[in-house]
Length: 307
Image (cartoon, rainbow, N blue to C red; front, side):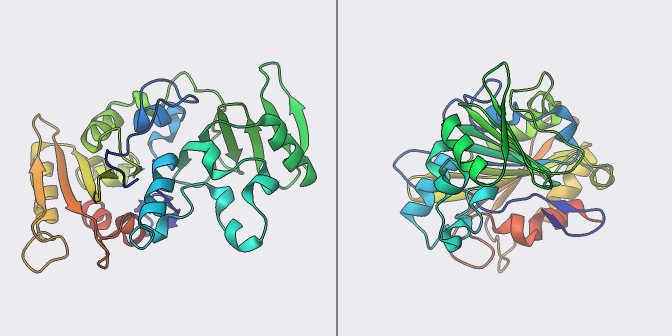
């Protein structure tokens, strides 16, 4: 997670993202609470995370994308898996260190304060147990068949056959099983997700913060999609009013004028009293236009969310 200003918090997008002949939609999330892709992943995240926001990766699609065009997606090698960060340079494979591999993971979500992570996919619980015990963790099985792994001074880890949760010290507790009330149930998240599309291969949802509402934004999200050899990203901002929507659109259009980085990109305002403002652009290898660049540079989010 990057702290940009005291009022602006960027998503914790560390690495993400199939340039196949079809779009990169996710399968049903076996460890989620229903639906597909982004919605299913958010259905595994408690509703109280809505204010701080969450980042999402379709890891299956991310792996295909980087394999197909590493020069374009070179910043996405981590696939959003925090345990993978640094592994290629440590000399120790992820499997032997943690008991699972990136190919076992289908989706990853992380609250934007970095307090933890929830992965879904297919996990060999015994392999995880053996690897983590070698690292000094004590293993306990619960009545549901899930494995609890604990080590003093280290992150807590819970794992089942379809989900793996890592928890650091913090205020948000990510559950192994989908909770009763989730971020996917939040009306603002539903609108922004509908705008982004459930088949995004990565998304950053910036949270429902009071400071953002002062700028006329209930929730902002940026997500990426791929179709064939083309990759695009889309910004969706749920405005607090029609007047706020016009102001947001005006800000974004300053970046789409001739000669600007996003020249030619279209900004649209949706219907209703609190419309969604959207802007879509094509990814390329140019500065600021690679997949995920806006989550790193915060050029557009800062423009919309800051005074």
